[in-house]
Image (cartoon, rainbow, N blue to C red; front, top):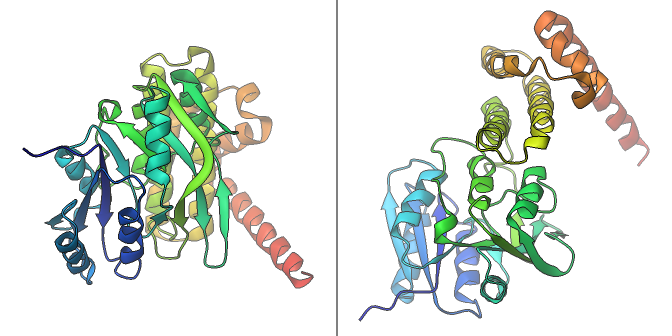
Length: 336
């Protein structure tokens, strides 16, 4: 009789032959042994798919799915549906984890009767690991406490990784063909968690590298991050979470929108693509024009209204601010 594993670990894979062995080896090295690993090869054009197959032949706990390229979110959604365990974890294919990560998460989740468990993580650069924790010490958050923290995106970051979930909290699949799908979705999973356990020990290594999905200059990414923030506002207000903070949430949408427009201007100040995405954000921001200066702050309130009433002046001022900041950074580097 087939025995179901306690944890299903999901890894979407696309053209990461350089990093994939380290990632899979870190799963195999876990001190917690009762897991299955689902590798979803998203139409890789390098040896990533072959590497997945090689590992599956060595370890029966490893399953491989090969499919046409359709994006990271779709790969994860497929694996979620195929997962056999009642507990689900995610790892990115260019990252790696400490040997006891899933043992620590499992003990935190089951020991505290929690629905989600979180550990700290490292931002792993070529020459250094910078730790980040999800709280002080170890403990348990209530649903509202955890939801507040992930909405602020400070003590709890909106990463699918470095966490362990009971299946019932995964109340919505990740949006396909969308950057920052975790930022737009993970907070919804937290609304289904009565208790969230955390330990501040960093166990997950989040590799920082050029060319990954988080580190390029596509203005579409700025637009998608804004849409993810707006989705948070819409979901929280529509479902009645924290009604006393709805104006604060609206102000955050405006701040993010202005920041992402500035980011587009900084990355690619001219061109049809940048203009198109700036106009997309403007059209979504229209409903937030009534946000009061007391919630937004005087400078951002002025910039919001200038964006609509004097867009050419707005762009001119943004370019001056960006130029002056770059000039200041250059000058400071000369004396470092």
